Amino acid sequence: MSSLNKFRLFGRTRDLEGQIDEFLDKLSESSVMFRLGVRTYLKEGANGEFDVKLKAVNKLESEADTLRRNIEKELYTHTLIPDARGDVLGLIETLDHVMNLFEGVMWSISIEKPDIPGEFNSGFRKLTNMVVQAADALVLAARAFFRTPHAVADYNHKVIIFEKEADKISTQLKHDIFDSDLDLARKIHLRNFVEQIDNVADWAEDVADRLAIYAIKRTV
Amino acid sequence: MDPTIIIFLSSGLFLGWALGANDAANVFGTAVGTRMVRWGTAAVICSIFVVLGAVISGAGASGTLGKLGAITALPGAFMTALAAAISVYIMTKAGLAVSTSQAIVGGIVGWNLFTGQPTDTKILATIVTTWVLCPVLAAIIAVILYKALRVYLRHANLHLVRTDAYLRLGLLVAGAFGAYALGANNIANVVGVFLPAVTFSPLELGGFSFSAAQQLFLIGGLAIAFGVMTYSKGVMMTVGGGLGRISPTAAFVAVVSHSIVLFAFASRGLESWLLSMGLPTIPLVPVSSSQAVVGAIVGIAILQGAAGIRWRLLGTIVMGWVATPIMAGFISFFGLYFLQNVFDQRVF
Image (cartoon, rainbow over all chains, first blue to last red; front, top):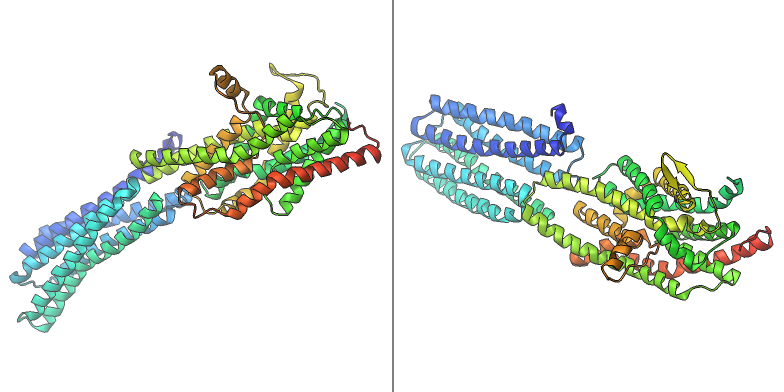
């Protein structure tokens, strides 16, 4: 924080608000990059374009980590929002994990280069779209928590719907994979990716559940 | 200055110290308890504004106490204040909600009884009515303010961090106003009984002229400030626990409601404005800061469904209205008897 900020009325407040908003922007950007990255891989394999997206997700994750640490430090050093501090910290950390999951899937694809037969492309694409939508709805719910807590429930509802749809798609995809003529090692390899991607939506739902409680606490 | 004045004033100063130690928590306890304001900041602001309130606006409520019983001899005033201080001490030790306002009124009535002076029942009735009115009024104001604030916060879409910053500033401003109102309203309890008996010559200081009453209010205000500085920390830290967990928003509303009520019962400016508007005036009477803040918090609790109300606490308030003045009256009566007959002091 610049020394000039100390003399601005609510300067620290504005800084912190800005950092929280920026953190949520990073999460939303990383979900876009994740979606584009997986689509690129499904279409063209692990080419240069995929690497660009992987690097973008990495960079966003590490910038978000720095922001998270700053936010936590700021909240505790200046004893800000004492009654909701624990909730905000919990929220920021669990949201950060969503980015870790995106990054994890991208790295796994980059390292393991799963050989996905064309017949499963559509299933993987649908699953990816659904978990990204769940993550996007979660970002909106988190933004609402800070400004309009009574609206959190609406976004949470969407997170839950997207998570359920993602579950349906992943179950169907796993059925299709194991019903195919692929050898067992490949089947297990592909299943592993289905579960890794689906895990993002599961985690988004867990965060949404916590967020629902935080929001109730704020509106009481 | 006659040194005996200080000796006789000591009981009032002790009462002032106890008031500062206890009642600062009503103004800043919730803010400090919820960690929205640091104790050091709270203590400094509280001390400054208590003294300002006492010196600038202390005369209104003191005048009413004077009408209840004009204690003209210093030893009499000493015993009246001491009776109040002892009652406050005993009630506090017993863990009961206590108000210096109720104690001092009991002490004055005790003096009236001992000296055979008639007690103006009209004034006494007005004072007792305001005691009941004070927490009720604080509750009503708190309900209105809390509802309005909730509607505002719902529609303002302020960021959580911004709301927190505004509340912090609000708690400081409301606390300063609350301390001013506390000084203005409750200084009457601390030095009000000494007013007719102590005659200081007017003091000129840096272009300002301080009347005898204002000098007495200044000394009393400093005693309250000393109580705030030396003993209020523990009380402030526990006040949140005593009243149950409340949110910073509720804390802010409680302090503002408390302060409005105390100010309304102390302000001559408000009285003359109401008169000029042809509206009924509010009697200028020292009321209990603790009961005002409890009234406000109960008001908010009722709004939230009354689940958090501790009825026992309300019971002790009602008991305070009855038990404290009676106890102070007895102590004052018998204390005056000893002071007159054993120590050979002129008490009236």
